[in-house]
Image 1: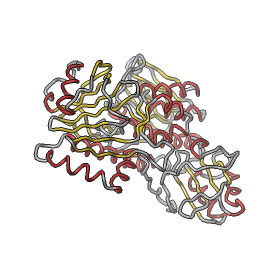
Image 2: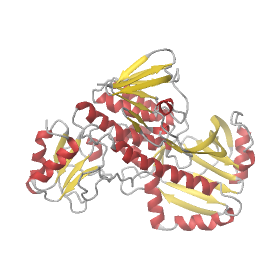
Image 3: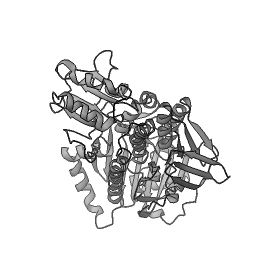
Image 4: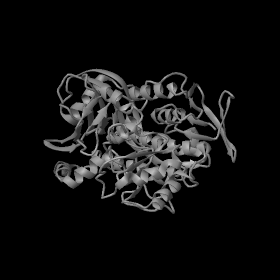
Length: 487
């Protein structure tokens, strides 16, 4: 049993690390001959950090990055704030960290667990049948696997080779990305500025350097291949924000045309799509890398279950039914943000009044922060599976009894379910003994979740089943439904 992953970005590397840790031979094919210094992504949201905590990486990355608790939107003299102090997460902030740092941690983990990374491997051919998939590269190498996953970006060769559609559109607007050294003080927040001239977003790395995302209405005719200079960044900031904030130096930079596209299917037989190969959208919102990380976390445990022979027949199909709607939500949100930022002349005069007023409404703020951070993602019940309370919701990082791992997220396994049992006598936990190779029973105190006292938690931290003082037959039925026949 083996898996080939195409693409060594954050999505592919997280997936590779999970599979390799589970003992599955995994090969990652990367078109680049050397490590990339590409750093388009710059933020990790709460849900991604929770998933990284399950892999022992969150504390390291938090220590390397800058924690920002809010987004402070300025439109002329009007200011609106989006609070990211999530009370339901251990990560009440967005973490500003260059993509390269996140990739480095994920690469180290994947290699430590035995994943093979092959550089200079450009995929040009793909065939599959009932026995597996065969991948060929431009230099004639052949790789075979039981499953393969395309994590090879917006111009995915894998997506093209399986014939998946990529409907959507290219925005006509050129976006500037740059890392700039600013001497001015912008405070501890992400700072979007909107004006008639365009929009600029400044996010501090914490060392005086900022990530700048700029859409400048006056420079849309400049070709994407034209170099971006410090003076051009200064001029755009002055036009949009009214200040260049003492921009003193420019580092990495690029111009690009943003797109809004989503693959019409995330699976074709033994081949899957994840990350930018499955969805691309505006960088406003910092959701691209985060959505890809969440794709990988959703898919990895399902592939592990399939390779170990206990996956229910419908399990791999749920990757499409769960992650395609999540990708669509990311596209819609980032599209809305971009449309507001680049609004036509007839709409722009109303923004200083409407946007701050909306952000003053608690219900709007709550929905916005939970959507952008993916804390509100809920997966539907698979066909034929009992719809119990809170099924498909993210399970909070519940405290566990002494000796049981401290907290749920820190002790969760990428390839095992957790059965939390707060029922009298712990009868539910005893029912999991026959599934001991894939389920960890934990006796615990009051769960505080809608009166439920037994929770079956998926390896990715979402709820598979819940019950209140359930009978033994109900627990066993849930375990059989989700975890297959007992060993």
